[in-house]
Length: 295
Image (cartoon, rainbow, N blue to C red; front, side, top):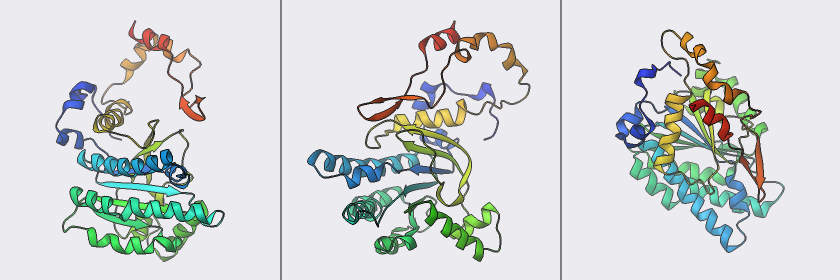
């Protein structure tokens, strides 16, 4: 991520109200959308409430994709992992039907048309049940499209590495860019942002070698509910809060350590959380540390 001058950082309120073009100027070119919690929703839709949650999640994932495109992301890589087609065939059929509708159902096709984006499915060779969906998707690509959804579906890490190894064998260029080209059929900028849901657990793989220096976020909202305000807050943090390699002289940062003492003298560790009703949630940063910074 490129250094940013502190004098060029807008306030969060200004960023939330800024034109979409201003947000797009700092948005990542490629973003990974970690949907590994979706199978838990889709395969357990055995009662009315869970069935409704599965339908709601479907709509919200599409809305999230539309919102990210609107704010300047050009390549979105949603991925499902751990699709087990051997252990529980009934749950597997339910899940694959849900994934097919998510990627190539009527609501999905309408969303792609609104976005004017191309759609591709990577990994269909490992799941024959999705090949028909994969064949339908290229027909939705409008001429001159600059946005692409790269759906990735993998039964597990072993399948992923088999696909990568096969691509490496046929690729003349075994650099990251060359492997991306062999796997996707074109050049794609490496991903610099990952957006997931639930506990902050690193995925067993980042879809098809796209990982760059990724800034990672995990929303705690149920059912993938991310409206534009939340997406803008994430992009603000990505673009302005995490790049601390400011331009020019950085020695001034070390003159302000006393003001930060309350923050770094706590025993807080990012990633430690608590269970609530069977779900994991992150612990809040102590109010005393924040108040100490402002004192």
